[in-house]
Length: 284
Length: 288
Image 1 (tube, chains in turn red, purple):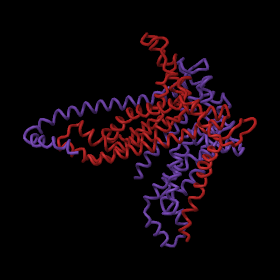
Image 2 (cartoon, chains in turn cyan, green; image 1 turned 180 degrees about the vertical axis):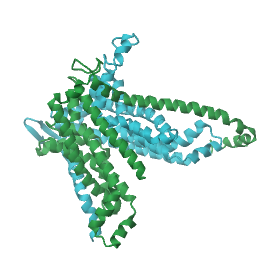
Image 3 (cartoon, helix red, strand yellow; image 1 turned 90 degrees about the horizontal axis):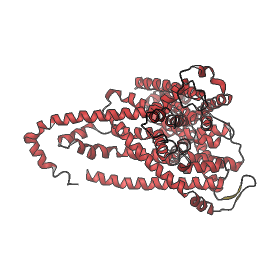
Image 4 (cartoon, rainbow over the protein chains, first blue to last red; image 1 turned 90 degrees about the vertical axis):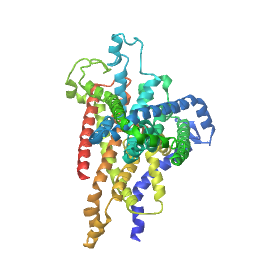
C-alpha cells in the first residue's frame, strides 16, 4: 500500500506547481482572449470570438513575417551547425568535449547581453563598420542594424547550440562500422555521406528544428534590439499589447493563435517526416 | 530500392580486379582537404560565436566618454572601481542572484522528488506527467509568460519579485526532474536492498545510500536551474511588474546607452559560469 501511494506523494508538489502555473494560466488566457473592455473600466467576458479575427487581420503581416524569419533562421542554423557537429563528432578525436564546451561557452553570457553586444559590434559607427567605411571599402550609408539580415543573424546566433547538440548526438551514434562497410562496398565518399551518414543524422536535425523553430518564431528580443520598425515580429506585438497597451484580450488572442499555429506546425512536420523516415527505412 | 544496388554489383567485380589499390591514395588526399575545410569552417563559426563575448569583455575596459559605449577610446580600469555607480543596476543584479538562488532551492527539491518518482516507480498518470513536463520544456516562453500574466491579472495578483520566482520554478522544474530521473534509472537497486537487509530503515537507506548515489544528478539539475533562472528574460519581463532583474535592466538601457559597468558584471557572471562548467566537466569525467 505504501509503495502504491509513494510515487503520487513524490509527484504531488512539483505536479501541482506545473498544473497551477502552466495549465491553469492557459485556461485563464483563453478566457481573457474573448473578453471586452480596457484596463481602466475593467474587462468583461462576452465570448467575443471576433477578437481573434480582428487581431489576425490587423497583425497578419507580423505573423507571416515571424514564420518567415523562423524558417530562414532555422535553415541558416542548420547550415552553420551541421558541419560543426560533423567535425566534432568525427574529426575532433580526443578534443571532443573541449570543442563542445567551446561551442557552449558563449551561452554563459545572458541572452540579452549577447544580443546587445551584437548591436555594439554592428553599430553604424562601431568597431566593425567604422574602419571599413574609413578605408572606403563600404559606402558611408552602409548599415547592418535595423535590417532583416541582422534579425535573422541574431536569431541564428542565439539558438545555434540547440541545433549543434542534437545533430552532434545523432552523428555520434552512427556506427563507424556501417560507414566502413559502405566503403568496402565501393561507395564514394559522397555516396557514403548522402546514403548512410546523412539519413542516420536526420533525427538529430529533426530534433534541432523543433528546438529552434518555435522559439525563433516567437522571439521578440532580436527584432527589438537588432531590427527596425520594418522587422516587427508577432512577439513584439504580443509584448506591447500585454505590457504597454494593457490590452490583454488582443494579446491573449494573438498568443493563443501563435501557440495553436506552432502545435499544428509541429504535428504536420512530425507526420511528414515520420512518413519520409519510413520510406528511407524501406529504401535501405 | 534496387536501383542504387544493382549498378554497384559490376563495379565490385571490376574493382576486385585492379581498381581497389589505385582508389586508395586519391581518396586519402581528398579526405585531408575535406577535413581542413571542415576544420576551418568550425573555427569560423567559433569566432562568430565568441565575437560578441570578446566585445563585451573588452568594452568593460573602454575609456568611453559618451553614454553609448561603442567606440574604442583607450584602456582603463576605472569602471571596476565604479561598479556601484548605478544603484538600480546593482539592485537588479542582487534581485537576479537572490531570485535564482531561491528558485533553485525550490526547483531542486520539487524536481528531485519528481525525478525519483518517475525513475523508480510505474504508476498510473505517468504518461500525463511526462506530457505536462514536455509541454513545460517545449512551450514558447512568450506563451508561458503571456498566460501567467493573464492569470495574475485575472486574479488581481500584483506581479513582482515573488511572481518572477514562481515562474522561474515553473520553467526549470522539468529540467531538474529529467536530469534526476536519468540518474535514478541508472541506479543499482541491489545496493539499497543490501542496506535494508543490514537493518537500515527506509529513511536511513534514502539519506545514506540512495541520496549520495543520485547526488551528481541533483547537482547538475540545480546548476541548470540556476543558469536558466539568472539568464531568463521573456517570462521574467511578463511577470516582473515593477521589479527589475539584470537582463531587464540591460534591455531597458539599450536605447539610452549601456554603461561599461554592465560589461563588467556580464564578464564576472560569465567567468563564474565558465569556472563552474570546467570544474563540472572535469569532475564528471573523473566519476565515470
